[in-house]
Length: 111
Image (cartoon, rainbow, N blue to C red; front, side, top):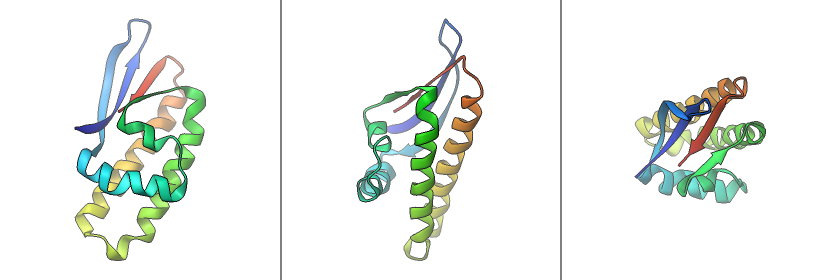
């Protein structure tokens, strides 16, 4: 299983693009425990899937920034490749969410 961001466009909900957020192993090993430790509410929903409304994007980006900072704080004890993978996926998701926030015809799903 993998966690993806799926972006749909228009009334016919045609798939515009999707991007990998995390593979199941890293999500279970890192994202979930970090979300619990940091008291994040949206990120745990990624595992089962969730529609992200435009109003949800700013608080979700805030959670992702906290997650990013947490990863940064653990950098000295992490495998370098795993660290780079995690921060690149978090950063990519933040960028994509901010872009989609400016495009009200987009529908977003993460799961």
